[in-house]
Image (cartoon, rainbow, N blue to C red):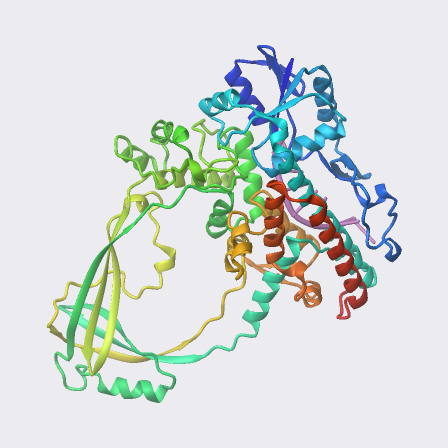
Amino acid sequence: MKVIIAEKPSVAREIAKVFGATTKKDGYMEGKGYTFTWAFGHLLQLAPPQEYGFYGWSVQNLPMLPQKFKLSIRKVKTKDGVVDDPSVKKQLDIIKGLFDEATEIIVATDAGREGELIFRYIYYYLKCKKPFKRLWISSQTDAAIKDGFRNLKPGSDYDTLFYSAHCRSQSDWLVGMNATQALSLASGNRGVLSLGRVQTPTLAMICARYLENKNFVPQIYFQVAIQVDKDGQVFRAISTENFKTREDAQIILDKVEDVAAGFPNGGHILSVEAKPRKEPPPLLHDLSSLQQEANKRKGFTADQTLGLLQNLYEGKLVTYPRTGSRYIGDDVFAGVPELITKFENHPDFGKQATALSGVKLSKRSVNAKKVTDHHAILPTGEKPNHLTPDQQAVYDMVAGRMLEAFHQDCIKEITKITVQSGSKFTASGTVINTPGWRAVFNEPDEEKKDEENASLPKVQQGENLPVPQKAILEKQTKPKPLYNEASLLKALETAGKEIDDEELRYAMKDSGLGTPATRAAIIETLIKRTYITREKKNLVPTTTGLAVYEVVKHRQIAQAELTGTWEKRLEEIRGGASIEAFLGEIKSYTREITVELLKTGIATAVK
DNA sequence: GCAAGGTC
């Protein structure tokens, strides 16, 4: 009997379907001589400190450097405290029973570092010795699954991938557990002050932005505005120069040849530029972009959006939500035209779904090379029933984005008029000629809402027009805004992009800080620690958060670069480099940061 | 009491 193990039930079911296996058992499926079972993500984790004899939180234990890490069953919090998750324990027993009977195991966990770790931890925890092969596929269509099974790889091909995954896991444990205890003990043990490779740089970003915003000194500057009248249709033009003082602006204002100053036609049109611009449709959503949109549109937190999407996924209404890819492969694209027809009766965008039938679809979101473990989020086409208003809102964002992504370009005309009236003034305006994908939600472009003129009257170069009004505008420079969930998620995704070192930037190019699956949880962790709070939509640090930031801000643990450094080394381990060398460095860093934190403590008032 | 990673 061959046993196939997937990362999660949905994938096991997809594979079983391709094999034509339909018999459902408790915790697995079977048919055609195969059994199909699954994990629920990580079932096992590195055991906590007490399992190596480090009892309580004590300076004597630090740094905690276990000789050999142990594995323990994933925990769950109950009213009786933290216990082994019973559903995990049950599934592990089922897997053990199947592995015992197996002649061969086929590993079908997600094709990536963590997928490998999920299987290997189970395999080693169960002390299994059976031979295993690896299924390595990046989409779960029938064709991809069949193709993958024709090309099963030897399990040992992925040994180095496992080593890199295990190193990642141990390193996070060593640095996180030790630094957390060190800082907490040094602060007089008044509650948990946690630190970690991902949460601490995230906290640092929020604090740095908060301080920058708070300490920002706005600069006042002046502009001169004139109103120009084209046959009763007026538009506003602004001085091309900004002025430091009101006096400087006044000089320009006085030169304006307006009607009141005795010039009936004192606005001379120097030039009119009208440029058509094509705006391609947006990409399909990945988890992060959807969380950002849901935060902007509905004010949902990242965590809420993930929860709502998980509901929809469990109801088989949307594809896998925790994806970091905004693309689909050609195989999935082949099914898109039919999928679109399922929305022809949708109350909001049925019309756009109908309009897309028979037209050539945009292929901007189609790129198999950019599909990683999972493709972009799509509706499945199943008919939704009894959705809550919040679920419906998220569902509509998924479905609406699908229609947008395959729609035509939006064609705009951007007009710039330059007017001479004593000095130079410009007016710009944007007119949408063909809405294309923008017809789906039919909303104004948020980034362009500050434009002074939506549309401009048709004027000719050389025309002389009346200037009925003029005024001085007083303006202020603005600080960068505080982070909200949407902008923080985006900043986490692109955290690597601002790193100067080219190699580190490259190592983080596809990752950023955290992963799509964990970013919502990171924000929640910072809130739970009372490091940050939500104020309206903004995320602002508390005094505790700022105090922790002050202690760590110049240390490696607070830099996004740390993840880049690790990623680079982990990739080398994947390529066969020494594990011991890397872990040795991690241990010495652990010793260093532990000593430093114990020594420094947290002098500032942390209550 | 603690990390970051995955998922129901």
